[in-house]
Image 1: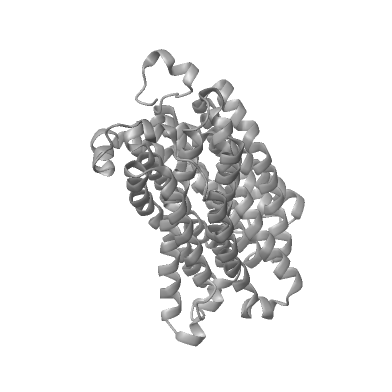
Image 2: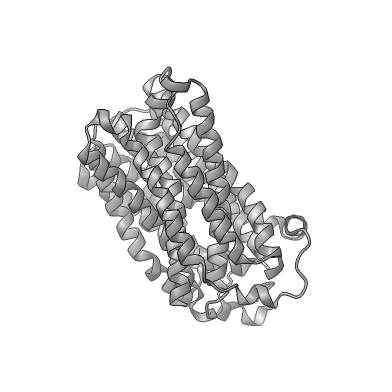
Length: 423
């Protein structure tokens, strides 16, 4: 289990590195380079729009790779999705700017960002299911939390690389070529991930299935559509909170408040370190007290904290900003530490890869794709404190709270006598 969990963690870290490095670049540099005819704020909005395309592609990747995972096994999904995401990320670092090739430059960004999202849409389901279906029932949330630590590691790798380049280069050098280096590094990381995953065993739960679904998506939408809608709505808050902290806040603070890029990256990265460290702790609580109570608590905490977070961000001071980000990410990890166990337990094995992947990535469209764009637009209409952003994030938190309230508990001890549709 330790080897399997470590390989899953490494793989998700690499895939999310690819995804996050684009978000950081979109917040800091892509607007002027690829949309120079726009005003600074409009350029940032356009860059965030290309960022959002990756989230739109993720449910499509979930359908495509979920079909493979339910028909052919979880393991092939991990290899192909990693190759696709890594190759498209390296290609982003090679795209000429608008000054060199005109409108073709942002169009190429859109295509490559779409391919990034397609690969990541399959990655999460394959990695989580391979771990969850090997894990003992009483510690499923703990072992499944290892892939959930991967996004924090990927974020730290991406932003640490950008931070080091920002410190070593002038602004002109960073804008000219320095921003490309983190994208090129994705190639080496992808090769490392393929090596780590080359010897992973197939899921025993998949091997036990005698009659595989012929068209998993059709069966899922016919028999479990309500579950898909509820899981997508429930997970929207996690994406909204995470990308408000890690993407929108970077652009807002550097452009509107005049905070240095280095200070912002350090504040966000410090909060993400704590979030990553707390993930297995919250997962242990999920094994002890259930998945649903932690998800409800996390949503409630997010709803209560969004207005204080934007108020602390608007100070432009490092310590208050860090505390604002930390509170938001603690609410986030309270939910998402147990999601990797919760979603597989909600869906029956025949359509589990498709169901868990589509539900998870649908939440990304609802919460992640729109949040940087909507928050930037709302902040433009606000004074120094962007209360509109706080109201938007609070509304998503309450929506997700309602969806989690309608979902059942799945912890094996709690549902043993209820004969659930899972194993």
